Image (cartoon, rainbow, N blue to C red; front, side, top):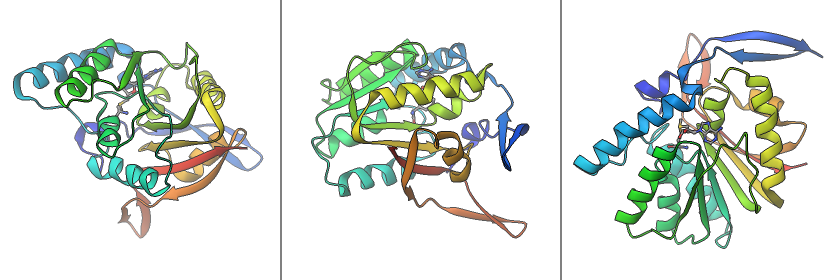
Length: 233
Ligand SMILES: C[S@@+](CC[C@H](N)C(=O)[O-])C[C@H]1O[C@@H](n2cnc3c(N)ncnc32)[C@H](O)[C@@H]1O
C-alpha cells in the first residue's frame, strides 16, 4: 500500500497529447525525479541503518514485493539472472536471495543507495549480490538479463524534467538489456495498467497482470499500485 511518502508520488497528471483516441498524460515534475533528492534521502536511511539496523523504506509496502517474488518463485525460473533497476536499499534482492536465487544484480544512480544496499547485504550474509552505481538513462549494461524488475524507479523517472525523452531512453535500455524470452516486471503507483500498456506497447506485450488490492471511491474502483509483467514483442 502507498504510505505517506509513497503518496508524494501521486501527482496531478496533465494531458499533453491526444493521438488516435489515446490520451497520453504527463506528471508534474517533482524533486522525486532528481538524483539530489535520492542521494539526500539515502544519507538519512544509512544513518538509520547504522543506528537502529532499519533497512529503510519498503516502497509500496512489503506485500507489493512479495507478490512479485511469489510470481517469480512459482514461475520456476530459479536460475534466472535478475536485475533490479533503481534497487534502492536492495531489499527486493535480499528477499530473492532468501528464496534461493543466486544470480542477482542491483543498480541505482545514487551512490548512497548502493552503499546502503551493500551494507544491508553484508549484514545479512548476502555480500555476493552484485550491486553497482549506474544511471540507467545514461549508461548501457554490459550484459543481459532474464528478468528486469522495477519497483518505483520508472515512477521516479517520469517525474524528471524531460519525461518524454527519459521514458524513451528507459524503454530502449530495458529492451537492449533483456534476454530473448526474458520478463520485464514493473510496479507503479502513478500509472494504471492501461497507461503502462500504452507507454510500452511499441516494444513490449503484457503477459500477466499481478492482482493488487483494490479500493472503491465515489463508485469507481481503482488500485493503489499496478504490477504488469511484459515480454518483448
Ligand atoms: C521509489 S525508489 C524505489 C527504490 C526500490 N526500487 C524499492 O522498491 O525500494 C526509486 C529509486 O529509483 C532510483 N532512480 C531514479 N532514477 C534513476 C535512474 N535514472 N537510474 C538509476 N536509478 C534511478 C532512485 O535513486 C531510487 O532508489
